[in-house]
Image 1: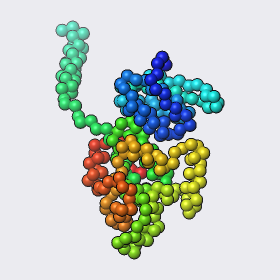
Image 2: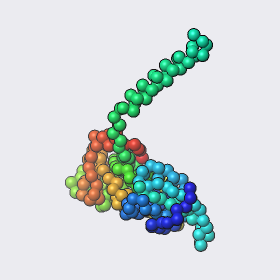
Image 3: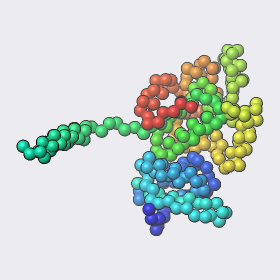
Image 4: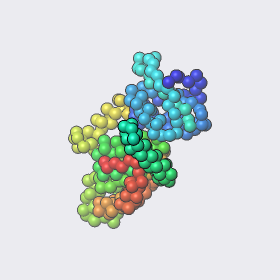
Length: 85
Length: 188
């Protein structure tokens, strides 16, 4: 799953715990046009599996890619790229 | 008849049979698909009510239509205040001895006469977990319905004016109707 080159909107869900990253993502996706790409940045490790199942179940979006990187604060960032259907 | 023909003919028959059955299945009208989740909240324990709202929020964020049914001890979570107006002695006692709102809910373990929830609240804040009230607010924003069971309201002496303004009222008919049409049914 290659990381998309362009992103239409970024949602910073860092520091948020379940279920807030999903709830905020759902809200952000609602405001996006079909085909737009949303990048979600989270610190919750559970968000990796969460977004995989959630994207499949919601039918509203497609999970394009997921990646991991180290944040400035030393906490790992879990990054999810979602495409609005 | 050669040996291979003897083997081939039943296989071909089976294939024909399967083709027919597949065609019959494909021509069937699609079943009505619902996308609902229904949760009964019987418990009035803080952590159980919280898990109900977390699941409701997750399901609603996935685009599901979610209904929470509150009955017995769960009703306390929907209260905005206490009122003793028109209540019997026992109902008044029940009202005074049960929580009046989410903030007043106790935990099922380590409650310590109400200190437990304060401790859990502090621990949740430290882990940056949203409070029960914040998660419930989020659930409402995502369209989660909250329905109070009128039968248990009568039994326990819970009046409509004690409950939050957006609460709906229903009975087992509404629950069974929604649950029968739901992909997720939980009893908490």
